[in-house]
Amino acid sequence: MNDRTCIVTRKTGGPDDLIRFVAGPDGQVVPDLKRELPGRGCWVTAERWAVDKAVAKGLYARALKQKVVAPPDLGATVDMLMARQLAGMMNMARKAGEFVAGSAKVDLAIRSGAALATFHAADAAADGRRKLDQARKAFWLQMETEGPIPAFVPFGAAEIDTLLHENAFKHAAALAGKAGEGVVKRAMMLHRYRAAPGTEGKAAMTNK
Image (cartoon, rainbow, N blue to C red; front, side):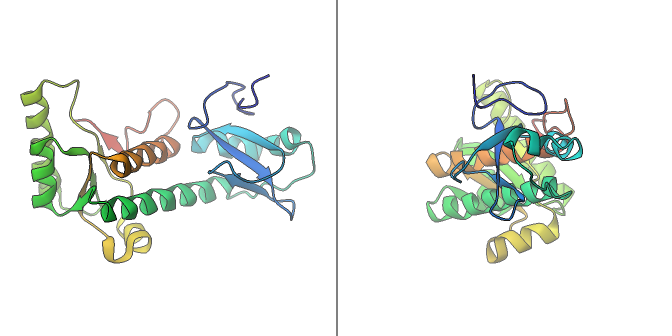
């Protein structure tokens, strides 16, 4: 039997499609995003609604085969941990020269083909986003790719300052490379997690 079967949907998936949970020493359900914690684990589709439903239906205790407490804010905890992972990957990519901030640098990265994705703070000026969206579209039409590179709005104004401190940005881009690819992967996972069922993160990610 595939041990990566969602306890909510009963569908199987790869490790990036599901989140592992274990029972902590205090009997609390703990998210194991890195899939490293010891003990029996269970898997839930990596979307907020599924984590919340597993809490509401008491599915964690059944799957872990022991008495556990699933905190009502477990879904929010997972969101916070995923956001921290994304911010940490952004900082790592910045040190590797694969994450740049500032409208001019982002525009250059898009038009040169180095950008894998763009990122905007929730309170970034609409005009700034519009100009970079135009650059994304122009490069797409020029290169005749399947679509423009994705644009993400992963953090609110307060959240971005808390997570990134002096590395907070209004506009940024992940560049080609292993670290840059890691940023995009985690951004996609976070947006999928936050999306309503069936929307595939469209509220937070756009290809317009």
